[in-house]
Amino acid sequence: MSSLVKERFKPMQYMLLIYSAEGAGPQPGTEEFGPFMQAYVEFTQTVREAGKFVAGDALQPVATATTLKVRDGKVETTDGPFAETKEQLGGYYLLECNDLDEALKYAAMIPTAKDGRIEVRPIEVYE
Image (cartoon, rainbow, N blue to C red; front, side, top):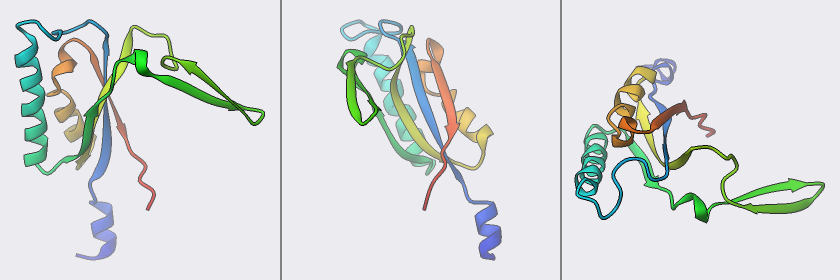
């Protein structure tokens, strides 16, 4: 296969950003939390076995966030996330998929999709 053909059919990376309102969905200490987390373990295993997994992690709660900006050479920090919204970014998966349809298929399998939202974005990989 020529390098041009390989480049044309090269899988793309997609960032699957997991958003939910804090307190939505099963909470630690509840009966539902164990199966909820097990569903994440199973999803991660599915994308690993399919050869799609690049990276993925949960984020600490939004109360631990610090937002930074630089204005006129001065660094300013603010406690908390950048945007005041109901739904907060709670984690991500970075997958290598053949196309957007495949990325959406996997995004729909993420447990939080049932009570939150999953944003799917192609990654611009600079080599």
